[in-house]
Length: 448
Ligand code: SF4
Ligand code: SF4
Image (cartoon, rainbow, N blue to C red; front, top):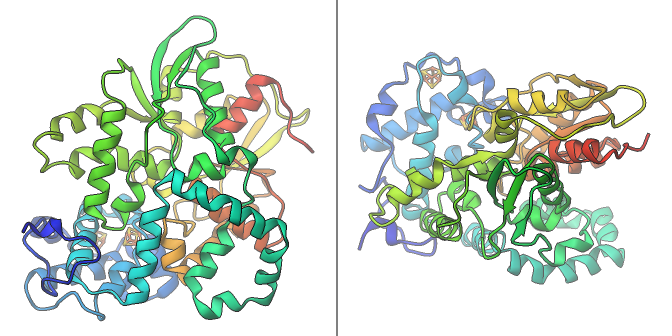
């Protein structure tokens, strides 16, 4: 049996890396141990130990590759504590591709390390529910009742959930108010361009976003059509595989990647657009995820050549729709760089360019803009303590700018920042840049 045929339920084969794509020694050898990456690493900032830094983890990978160490209780927690934010990749002067190393390490852990029954059960729950919008929808009514009956307030005020399981408490703490549109997908398969058609684009809906912040997808469609794009939305599209990919669930990520490629096949599109940065980064990785798949590897590369973050696309093709101010007075906005946008896709200029094209918007820059907010997919559930501290710091830094609006282009960051704004009793709206552009194009002003 091929090592990758093992699921998270399998018994471990060995407590070392197997032969199926272990971390590449030539990439490891590029690290000169200079330590420049340490100050930009969020896990090192919070935990403060060398082994929870990029340099320490690279050292561990090397020692496991050499047979001097193994996948054990002594090493795996240091890989688990990595947020996968890729800040170290942006910082490293030697060009060490840590993204490739950690992406190779995570599936090795899932195949070759026996997690505790509790951890296994939590991961099984996450990966069998979160990437399936219809399964999540079946939980919405009970969750809505939980919120509306006041049970949520009671549970939060008693605080006992944290004693039972910090991870369950973290999951509960992030639960946003469930919007009425969450129960059904409402975006049709084809939305025509307003005025002259300039482009025909496909749109990926995301799985968590379409349930918990569906207004972002509605706004994205309106912005695109107002700017001359015909928008195609395959109705059977599923999850892009980002959650699975970032946590080393290799077979599930491959399955979702194949399904996504199939659902966008033969549509004659100029681009495939995504408005969530974590998803966008994984979609652009499909060539790598399906590198061993003879049937799909070429199709994956063709698909990737069309994938663009919606802000990257719009900044490139230019806005043509008229825009009006969101307030009578200037509006201060702080743009929050999501890690998989900034470090993963190197997109930082384009969202700011678009926001500056809204009349009256003044951008502010926070301290530690390049530092992760602690969301990182399901990191804020699995590693809740580190995530809490990073969320707290991020919200302080964003609100210290004095901005009246936080602009965030990633659903995970939106949930994390919203949670910590509430914890800090701060009422600053968190909006996707597409929502701000949409309001501006439709002439809607923000409340004072
Ligand atoms: S990863 Fe790069 S920055 Fe970090 S220690 Fe190695 S060479 Fe230095
Ligand atoms: S990906 Fe982020 S958390 Fe992980 S080692 Fe690099 S900087 Fe640290």
